[in-house]
Amino acid sequence: MTRKFSGDRLLIATHNKGKLEEMEHLLKPFGVSVVGAAEMDLPEPEETEDTFVGNARIKAHAAAKATGLPALSDDSGITIDALGGAPGVYTADWAETPNGRDFVMAMTRAHDELEAKNAPHPRFAQFRCTLVLAWPDGHDEAFEGVMPGHLVWPMRGDNGFGYDPMFVPEGFDITFAEMDRWEKNKISHRARAVKQFIAGCFG
Image (tube, rainbow, N blue to C red; front, side, top):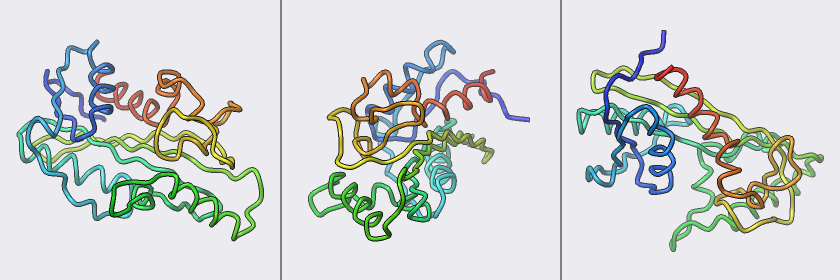
């Protein structure tokens, strides 16, 4: 049985303003106010697990323990079938440079590795998002959202972020980066995870 959320304040364990705004918007109907990790002056814990749920748990428990508030965190990324599920939890790491993240470099790496393997088309991939809600007493609930699709090259579209310009979601013929932001937010892996989280903890 999923533990229900009964408070009126939820800490979102992220320093990302966009994610915070998205959660604020989604939780408004439930009378829940949200606060971000940056406002609480929380450091970003080191993500040492090799699964999305493991890393999300690290972030959620660290934030709940530090503040005494229930904390929601997410870990997300892209898994590419022909690369054995890579980059997976290393989705952002593939973009790291000494001057910040370069996702064109990351997408090019993904494409080059697929070409080197002579991977057949369509090149299936999934965007995955795992949400973990942790309480200060150590209990947690986890929810996963998956958006299947395939990869295209060259990159297409100027919206979105990360690997969006090379990812065409299932049932569409345009990339995430060619979609309107709100359109994408309605169908994305994060939207699917949030739907499960709301049904589980507020339903």
